[in-house]
Amino acid sequence: MSLRIAPAARCPGAPVPGPDAAHRAAASRAHPRSHLTRRLALPALLALACGAVLSAAAPERGPAGGPEVIRGEDFLVVGYGADSALVRDIATRVGPATRQVTEVWGSARPAVVLVPSSERMAGLIAGAAVLDGLAAVATVDRVVVNPRLFARLTATGRDVVLAHELTHVATGAAVSGMPIWLVEGFADYVGYRDAGLPAWEAAAELAQEVREGAVPYRLPERADFRPGAPRLAQVYAESWLACALLAARFGEDALVRLYRDAERRGIDAALSKLGMTVTGLTAEWRVYVRDTLA
Ligand SMILES: [Zn+2]
Image (cartoon, rainbow, N blue to C red; front, side):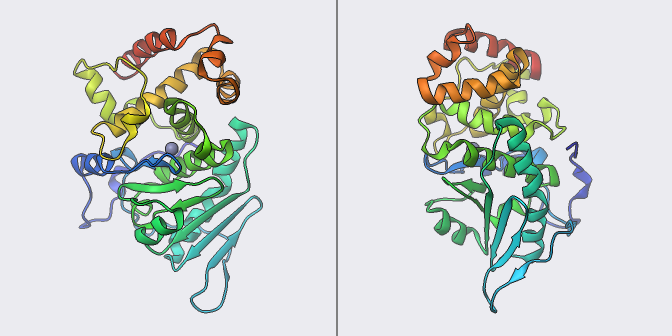
């Protein structure tokens, strides 16, 4: 996909969140370990849907008030009292997002995407205490969309978020004990792979820090993703760039093998197969971040 952001495509007169609002949304998002999440932080991915809804297969309707179900070849989208246009739009995107995951990971689980009527319902379905600031949540076997925030994403943002969450589902990330930079970075790597966004735009918050001379000195750790952490957008970007570096240097297949190896044998053993250590990777990554974003 090569969809690009169209900043002018915001609904006139509607309350468009600026970078500060987006940053606050990022800072307040939760990231419970068992519910891996994709941030809404990126201003580049934020927009207000203006009714530009893509066509989709006609949904199956249950009894009045029942779920709205759209079946695809390799996915199922279920709306529970959700805006039908949003459910249809998501249904047009899940198939390509699933194929994107398959292209990189080698396989993807048949996608089940739930679209409830409200943020509160999304939280209840996902079993997450807080969904504020989250566009979607991945559990072990499904993606739960937060309709309030997902609807505000651009077309590219929706594709990135779905591919990110479906990567978590495919890789079993919700039950993984791997380094968080690899889990989130890999999901972002898949999400952004074909998005056509330049790094400075996808990693806008981190790029600003780097331009001001602040280059991160270590790979993100789990605590950096805690709810309310002040640099959530940046640590997602840092994680993404760590995986982008590995893919650029060793190839995408090697990145996938590293992910699988790290799951089985730990990150140190996985990196050693590439002749690397965490310390060595960190040093190379700092240079890569600076050169990519400065
Ligand atoms: Zn995630």
